[in-house]
Image (tube, rainbow, N blue to C red; front, side, top):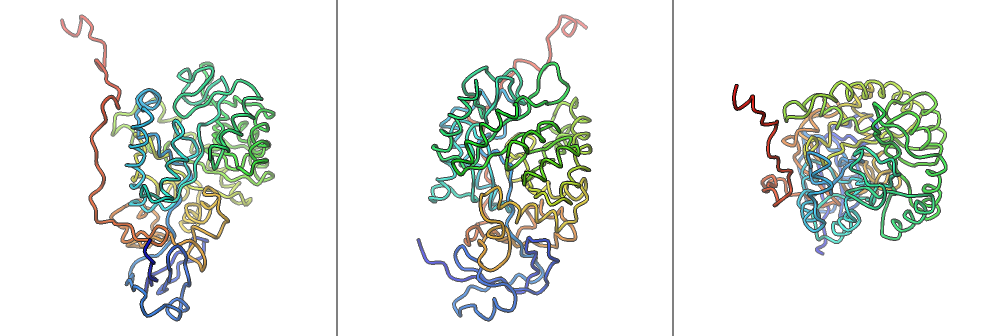
Length: 443
């Protein structure tokens, strides 16, 4: 691999990812995958051969870290497509095709907590080996479910594996599968703590505290953190009490759940983006409107207590749940920051910290070693046209991205956006959108 010269980003405004106010007319010097210096020292220690990039009028900031991204799902419009139309070989091809879109959108790191088949760790290793261009990646394997299922209801079998799910029969299988996933290279062990049952109007906890502890204690003994899908207050409390390290959604938080999170030291990635996209824009792409009010309500009922958790010191991470038809890759990775500002009341710099410095947790890196503009931090850097601390929404506009450096190397933003045709059998084929009744033919 060729030696990389130093790069000096000269004269820009810097958002360092820690919540500190924007610093104007500030230089940043990096070499390979390491920031060397920031400010006046950057110019002083830069080598004569350093490549100088004039970024006056632009903002220099850390690359975004998406802490909830399903890179192997392939943007299905339904669980039917996800579970039954993704052969393993073609699913990996599609994932490798899509992962580069994240870099083009300013995402330089992401967590895929549960993958279909066993694709996640293999894709992660392929990125690190240079076989596939993509951001830094941490990965889980299949999510662990009980026989009560998860969000896909009765599509989940009573045993075995389907799509992203691995159904656990008993405590012994929970322990054994956790050990197997660690051996297979999982960075995280994912648990679907809640499920949608026919006799409930919303997801409820489908794991016991003892079952959750069976997984967390096994994983932690092997040096591996755990992550949980929780869309109820009870499930969030149980997950925190069991020692889960990162809680996704944490929907409908109550005081007991917040207290449990604070006591446990867990982080939270609320992932409002999928809910907001369906509620705000689902009608534009033919989504059913039955869940619109429910999803808007879920955001509203979660936001106030999430603010309490934030003020109590709980780390908040940004996740987009990209990977579905409502959250295609490369389009919505920055929207979570807008929602943290609008729904929770964070200021833009706090929201940016959630998507940069705090993302080190999702990547299993020391906080401050990545996702910040600081000496000795990783050289994952964005150059943005505009000031995100004044208008956070500009981070969702790819036209505003002037440079992306991933591991210190520039990403080619001048290429056409990747496009492809559907694979044979990839999409659900329907005979009709409604019943062909006699009355339709004979009005």
